[in-house]
Image (tube, rainbow, N blue to C red; front, side, top):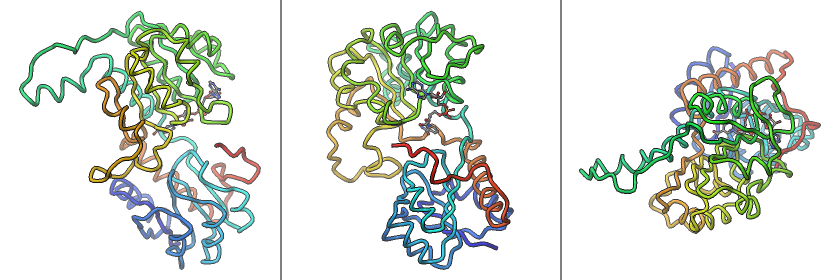
Length: 334
Ligand code: NAI
């Protein structure tokens, strides 16, 4: 059995990895701590590490891992902006990821955020628990006949577009690589921003999409526009969003991601003072709904992540090639 140091382990990870790991010939050493240059030494005696989005696989960490005999890093996620691929190659550490696990999970979560906000069910939930059955302030909005703008029509965006069309919405999209034949009307981003009643982001974070929705974009939007972001936090300038929520320009915002999320998401910080005033103020608005980067968190996605990660490692130890291996030449996202 090959031994794997499994960093940042949560109970929901163990459920699926306890099944997939042994089947792939792996013994898993679960560690609750994140992987950092200081915690890398805990992998001593392990053949590989398994890491997640907020683990640090920078040059210092990779060098400590290599000194302690680690030969592979298996990411149990798609993104790899937290890995220095050149340093991994220099230290002889092979890197693998899970490029796709359940686009439906993310698309359905985006739709859940949208419907919650347009039908105010988050507010009804807290009210009726207090035996407040008033309907004041709960007037919603139909999606039927509204224009839904989808930015990025890859695996997730296409599914979300199909769901919105199912509600009778007019779907328009922008993507540098349009999927012709999907029955979607493609437009330029600036036109999408001007025309949409709902804007949902499904494109990757790259230098060119950083703050894609910034002050000038918000200025162009329709009054009362609903914003949904399940992609990456830094696609939106959070301060500009907050100002536009406060002014009423933005009618509602559903955020599964936030640009400074690494400090708080995935952790219980309820007994700490939170210093991020932009997030504090967003959280205090009745028409802003924040979830903690959980769009991927379904049984189906977790099972797929565990099985692909275990298979990536099985192939590595068996000396087989893997299409999920990352190389130093791969584009390094921001
Ligand atoms: P994908 O790679 O299949 O699709 C991305 C699409 O965005 C592609 O069609 C691409 O051409 C397009 N695109 C690239 N640059 C663009 C631009 N400037 N404007 C408009 N479109 C652009 O990716 P997938 O699987 O659909 O995932 C989408 C995003 O969802 C990922 O980038 C990731 O950030 C996010 N995600 C979030 C999760 C969560 O738990 N919240 C989980 C998994 C992914």
